[in-house]
Length: 509
Image (tube, rainbow, N blue to C red; front, side, top):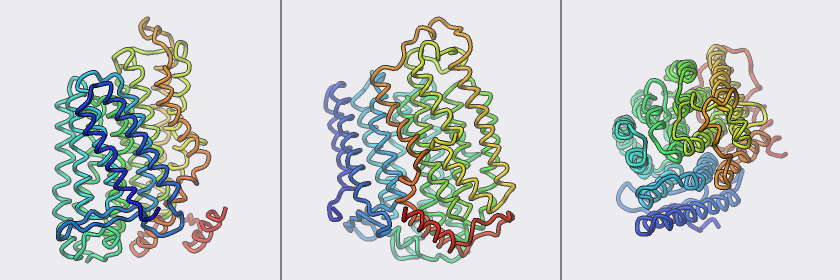
């Protein structure tokens, strides 16, 4: 299995299917897209089953030198594996959610399949410039999906999305060229071990930060996200919240932290400040929204702020927590957008006030919606709890004040999500047309049931998702140890050695 180019195959299948979708009728395009995404999902499961937990850090490597300084280099570690699985898991669900698309169906499906190729490519690339190409090219299909199949203000939203995300990336490319020349290699695993001079690290870190902060999105460069979400079609929102926002977090964990540890420690205060503002401010903005999609979009910014806090906690709990929050948010936020899409298809409005009392005529829908609302808040037993608890434990070791402010995000999150749920599912049925909406169809069950299973599984037994990446996070933690900032909290969860022993005990179970 180790010699089989499974990663290239996972990129090839959706690419070929995308071309086919352009050439066939609308109904055939839907079928082709669904079959192709399911095949890629099966390949993802094969990848997961064959991944050797605790084995070599980099597995399934492929390397074909193309021309000087550039090679087709693919390979994954546990962190990349979990994010690829998230991508291939959500993709068939997105195709199922796209039944309401009537115009240019073939092109729409092709755009989604191209999106899948580029998402897998970002997480699997092991060459610096190959990563950059995948990372930036992901803008194009998303830009088209919002700009052609989006809402009334789709042109404005797609331009804003494109310009914001492109601007940060130009600086990153210049930094990458300098790094490749200085280190004499574009191989990402090699660069992760390379020690750049501390004064250069500062500038390199800022260049990468310019790109990743917009992708995350961090406050104050988050303003493109609510616009993009509101205008995007349902499936576009799912993939945007589910996977595209994770590319920023992946960038931090793959580049900023291991390659520039000193600079990361130097700028940790900046990350804490922006993340604390994001948690509080965007949660308060979410409280006053009338548009469901906007509310969920602002909640995404608040959740991703918990991720950045965990990443820059410089300890194992914070790093593991931020990865689990990313996976959990990908599932839960995607599911919440699906829930909005389901009632939007029936009533064609996202105004919260137009609904009410849906638990009377759509009880099954109300139950799913409740579960995802609770997972978003971080109810124990759901995926949200595990990640938030670990992230806050990690950040508490660095600063009890930052942890306190981040903790308010959990309380505010409960406020706006429960307020949303009460107004949609409970109360009087004000509008006859909302009261007449039918409950979930079989197709909608097929969309929500798998995510429900994954959210509960991650909440009850997170080890499945944490085991593959534990070794990589321990290696990253060891790399960061020399730059670790001193914490103000007296809490220590044991020395690194004790923690390591504890982790090994956990692994033995």
